[in-house]
Each structure stands twice: as C-alpha cells, then as structure tokens.
Length: 146
Length: 147
Image (cartoon, rainbow over all chains, first blue to last red; front, side, top):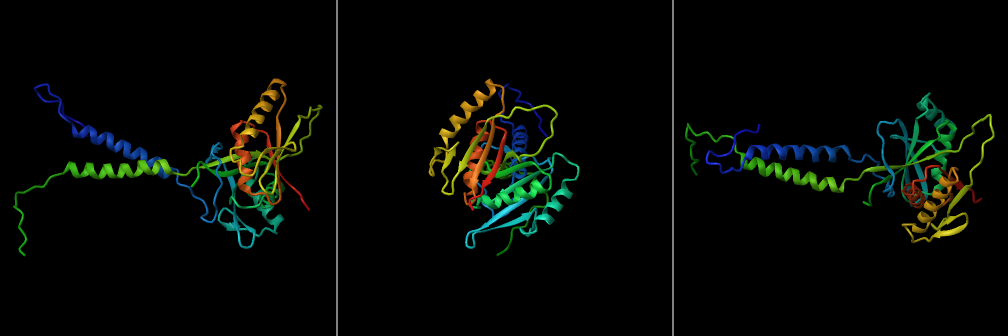
C-alpha cells in the first residue's frame, strides 16, 4: 500500500499512504483488544471487584456456576452455565458436575456470584463441587469498579 | 429544481481525506473503549481433601481469617479490618510478614477464610483479593455454621 519517496528537491513531503498503514494497524489493534475482552456475564449478577486476581484462563475447562441474588426474598438462584438449577437437588447437580469433570483432574469450578449474595449460598455450590470430586475452585470478580 | 447533470468524463476517484477522518473516529472510539473494558479476574482456592501418605507429614500452622456478618475481618480472632476498611492494609502487612516467616522456616502457610453464613460475598472476595496481593496461595474457604 505504501509507496513513493520524497520530492526530487530533497524536501520530504507528507506521505499519506504510510500514515494510513499505521492508522489501520492501530485500528485493528484496538478493535481486537476491545472485542476479545467483552465480558459475558449474566446481567442479573453484579460481580465484586478482585483487582489482584489473575486474568481468567479461557482455555482451562471449567463448570460455571452463576449465583444471582434476589434482595426482596433474600434467596440465591443458581445456574450451571445457562441452565437453572434446583438447589435442593444436591445429588443430581453433583452427578452432572462429576460427569462433566470425567477424568480431567484439572477441571475446575468457576463461581460467579453477586456481590450481595450471602456466604452460605456460596458454600452450597462448593459442596456440590466437593461431592463431584472437584477441588479446584475459582471465584470470579472484575478488574475494576463498574 | 433541476439537478446538475454530471460531466460524462468526471471521475470522482478515491477520496483519501474522508477515509482518514472516518478511520480516525473509529480508532478513537476503540481507544476509549479499551480503557473502560471490564475484564473478568479470578481468585483461585482449593477445597481441603484427603490424601493418604506413607510417611508422616508435618502439619503447618493454620491461620484463620474470620469474616463476620457485618463485614469485620479478624486474623486468629484479633480484629484486622473494620467494616469500612476496604483496603485491609493491616491484614496485608500481617500476611506478608507471615509469608516471609513461613518461607524462612521452610513451612507452608495455610490460610482458612471462614465467613459467617450471612457475610456478604463482596467482603469474602475483598479478603481473597488481599491474599492474592500478598501472594498467598494455600487458601481454603469455609462457612462457619452459626446455628
């Protein structure tokens, strides 16, 4: 795309073509970093801030438990990926998690809970993980305040 | 009104100036967006498990961090963070000292974060975040049964 030299008199001219090259490269760079980091979180969940945590490893397989908080009833609602869970069906959930884990020792449970959620509801999700033999647990948070 | 008819030989050609304008605007948009993008971070813990070993293992000193319902943080029952204290600097300095001591003694630093049943998740993450800052890795999370 870029081409052409300076003027014959030795006076360097303003070159538009290399400027466009640089501009497009910058554009592609900013486009890629913004689109790859878009957060895909349940809109009902307001994540707490965990600025010192490590960036989420997308490659590692993880069971994603979303815990939203209903302030009016004071109850938590659970979702495994996008599917609603019945919190009383402990054995059923544990079986499903165990099946997902299979023989993968590195399989982990990623907990995305609302900041207002009570600790006992988090503990329940950890129980399911323990029942399924998953001991790698990660808690999710945001890099900065919304 | 009569529209002016274009000259048959007129070739508008490729206009570079408006293209640069548009590209600049798009780039500015993405530059601004890049600064405000929210990235998901994670704090890793492990659940305590059973392990059968042939030889006797030396148990490290266990350190207990408590989180009360109101959000007060204690370290082995000593208060280290009030309800309003979000930065938990006191906890951080104590964690750094304990980690150094454990490294010198060549033992593991084992931390249990024990929250009350109705403690807010945000406060738990606050504490886990401070532990991540102090580079403490052996952390377990438990909920104290208040019934």
